[in-house]
Image (cartoon, rainbow, N blue to C red; front, side, top):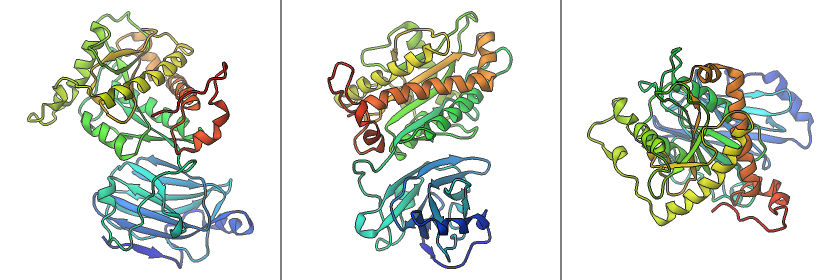
Length: 407
């Protein structure tokens, strides 16, 4: 790949440039001085050269696929031009928002996970956006690649990977009214991501933001690529008895399923890869889930967070089981990311099917899940996050004992 650096002229595709001149009058505003792009067909690295460090928010959009970064109180320096198309990136453009935020948009040929990090201090204030796998995105000559550094205290957001269950040729469960699980899970996942992104110090990454089929292991891989602190898989349950209703929350099992229903559900979800036509020569998703010591510790963290989410869901509607359930879900099998699977409601229940189709009810599910996550991370902020600094005063419980941070 060839890195392209632009420091003069304006791109024809820049949006809202008339408003950008307003930023020059703000003496305290950061300035975007240059944009560098290095891309292949599998990934890209976009480097933003800023006059000073700034908070930012990174998220993805679809139709078309885009990666967006918002830079509050930032303006575009005179003479900066957007890079032209390269590799998977079809366009880079800028836009000034009414509140003084500068938006940088990278339009893509296909959806990619995205994460951000700051270059070492000696290289100035350079925000690096990595799109796709880091290895695929960083194939420019070594002398010009600016790799993200390890996060320091207050450098980064808490990152939540939000996984919309099923997708593509795998519709998941289908209600009597024709509602497909893959559609409602995507709607709830998007709503949840919006609420997480609105929370200071937190950021969401969707494993899928379109109607596509993803193998279970690919969902985990995308969470790892995003350096997620938590993985949330959203589903809508189905059962033969249409009178059954309520939400349930699951974590990975250590010693078998917590109930026969949990075991049956996990077996059904684990077989989704093959049911949707995944490679028949890869039987890994159907193998028993084996737990090692490190993963056992992660499960404990998962269960603590799941209890907060379960309590929040109780506030907005009926729950099927008041306790967090356990079963051998392959999609939850990560040795270093706390994970949970949420069955929001029973799509097989006619009343709950209607609820799942309602944008208002989808928002209520999203609000509850986001509230549970906020409650957990307020008491257990990961090291190296701004969330830990912003909520430092909440780290002591009502009894005065300090709560341990997430491993």
